[in-house]
Image 1 (cartoon, rainbow, N blue to C red):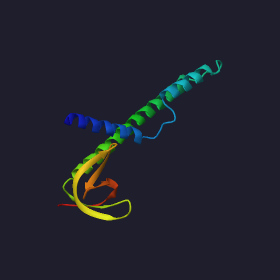
Image 2: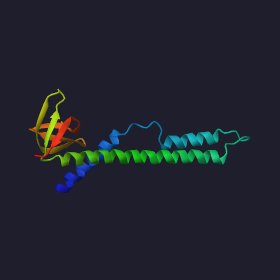
Image 3: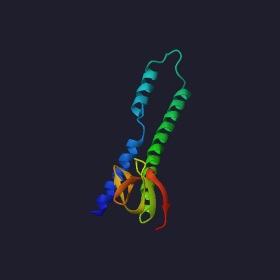
Image 4: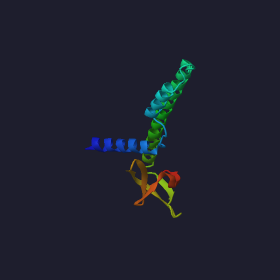
Amino acid sequence: MPVNSINSTTDALNLQAQSALPEQALNQQDFLKLLVAQMSAQDPMNPVSNSDFAAQMAQFSTLQTTQSMQTNLAGLELSQAVIQANSLLGRTVQVQSAQGVTDSGVVSAVEIKAGTPSIIVNGQSYGLSALLSVSQT
């Protein structure tokens, strides 16, 4: 059973990382369609040079690499948030609720909902953004 919970947590982090990325307007299929349309509509007396096509392919390759790196960074950011939340276990923290009420207590648990970690203080769940201070117990 513990393996399943680890996998479901990893899956939740991956899902959250994918949904955290902005929607892309053009994808690889769109680029290839544009490239084919450009090639078929070019003037046979004045064709586009091979260097222009090579430059477009290089730009597209760079775009794919950037998108992959963006996905990896989003996953890394979520993993880092989970590690940060886990490091707070057993520590005394001061948190501020959405209503502006300040509370302090010992972090008793870490909860992950939809891939986002939150800490449990005095039976209440708080996001990491509500954290005001951390001290040794």
